[in-house]
Length: 261
Length: 248
Image (cartoon, rainbow over all chains, first blue to last red):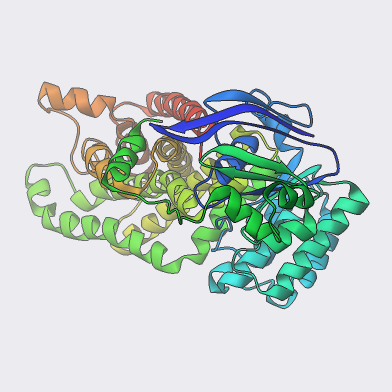
């Protein structure tokens, strides 16, 4: 369903993604784990047509996101890591606009919006402007919106960041349900190892733009001789903390990028 | 077409909901109208050109449209910073439709803003010479709105963040406004200035508005309409192209 070969993305001298390859088969839940700045989001951005790769090839349901972006986009849905709501619109309007963008027929749209907003306990606040929402509510709305249409592939980029355990539970139950009943292929990233272990069929660990290991949670634990997935993760990626920092050079680069793409 | 309509509606809704912005964007043209209109009025009249308020009102309407439409296009940058842009970019919809919805929305709110200013001008004492010609003024408002919403979208797609905004304001928007003949008649100018004013698309919009509102035109209605239509198409194509190239 997703096929990636030797994918590379460089920003200036920085290699964000450095020759990764993997396959996700139809109906699989695949977790992509890695420390901050490892290249997870960049990979998702390339797969979802938001960034063009420097080199390498990708296929989404047999379609190339670079040369057939429009067809590729009709195959997936995505919940972004950072906010992507229109805060000047109401919760309902955000959902409705999304439904229109994804050609969900009006009748189905109305029903599903009610179901999803109720599921994530936002139905009572449907006519409030999103700018009045708390961080957690916005997050829940993003997720509800991402589930409005039923794509063949669902990308979830750290969807549970800033969610309470109740909503997290709600989300994963729903995602598993979609996966089992509709055969939706799921590609997710998260920092919570327990979520990955419970939800994903297969896991890949990425660090410094390379995939350092992939397999089932069980296999990764055996490979490293660790007790838990978290210990396996630390054994594979080390315990130093990375920050995605912006130094003076980065800022200069950003200034330069403003005018030239 | 549904998508174009939804994105158009989004722009219009956002505009109607931002009262402070509406009032704020009336203030600047109003300042020009009242201070220059009444301040330079006596000088203008002494030189035998008639009422300056009558002359400047179409210019001020054009100014409001220029600012509103170009900023609605650059508003793309806000969508980029607040993240909503991504949501539209990954949708299975041709980017041309997304761009069209936004741009038509921008041109629409610019025309509403221009109409508001026209009403304000009339309260200040402005009178159209012929009510029957006023509908033509709306055609010009919409065309000017399209020209600059298209240009704004092209600019908004090429910028990465708000830091370039001041640059655009000082080196593009203000010159377009000052060279358009909104504030002074475009005849008997030094050659260099004449050339610059002829190259400014807003000149034809202001002249068209003046033709419709006070019955004075320099280039003629046909020239004004054709130049604006051609430039609008050009900028829409440019905007669509720039928009299709966006990467997050």
